[in-house]
Length: 440
Image 1 (tube, rainbow, N blue to C red):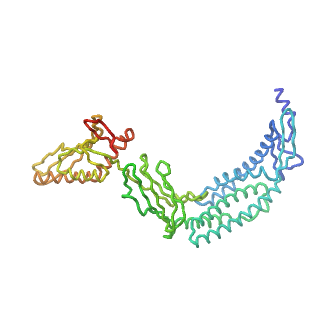
Image 2 (tube, rainbow, N blue to C red):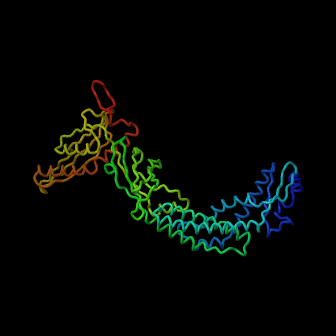
Image 3 (cartoon, helix red, strand yellow):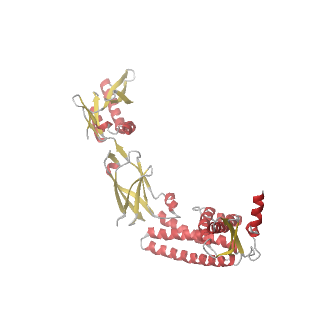
């Protein structure tokens, strides 16, 4: 209690009240700070002034209500005000601060910083008018770039104009607190609508498309995949624009700049953990970046990494040649001594005499020779009509068509899980004399 009493006696009155007879509150903002060093005390005083302005602006419900009423769908004005305020409060700490009082008591410094509202208001007015002039010039430049076919630079000009507009609003809101009279005319709502309409019109004319891909986005393990895309505005090529290719997990697959035809080409080694790749123009926009997503200026395409490797096929069914074709088209090589064995056999051929139909079932077993265990099983079933032999072949041919549609994807699902633990599973071949060995 005694220490607290000494502190209260030694600390000057203005430190507690933020009031000083020489600096009336209608003309000045007072910030106070203390610390064991003069630098620490001054820093706290500057922060104190910044907080007073920020809190005052946040409490201006009328301003926020008006801005929300006329806001566009793209940005939330209140969010923009707060974020921009944090940037605009910082310069206050470096401009037009007067150190009115400095006291050293009991090992501590106590300082009072004063911001003259009139002086700072004049600075804000000049900055606002300067921003308005820059915004108008950027809009004119954007139109010139658009006419010359440089749409990306035009968008960057409009993006910068929008950024300046929100920064200007933050300064204007501070100005309304410092000097709520004789304010400059600010037709920012009309200006924002004009800018955003121009941005929307340009973005809607953009188009990004795939013009070529290797084997319809199918590739074997450890093989490169080639993708070619074209970026245009109203069917006119855009260049040079950086196009980014990103895996589904966020890892960058590569980057490429468009040429004079708007073409960007990339060769990449597909990720084994992701089967999608996103393609989009990598443009450095600060405000309108999200609008590219809104208008879907990006491509999300799926690719298939075929497992490949060696498979031993064991079947005595009449559709054996069709099954071999399916496997070889999928990147697999048929080998007698592969570690992985695909056993395909008939498990059901049930004839219904009165209906003159036959129900046929085929079992597919994926067998690991090395571990001597079955790692997957799935069935195919179909019906045939007519005499037994014709009905039997009809059912088998239908099963072959089913396999053509999904056998490879079923095998890929099985192997993708297995290959995580044993990457060379499909590349091992068995020899009675030499044992297991890896085959390239």
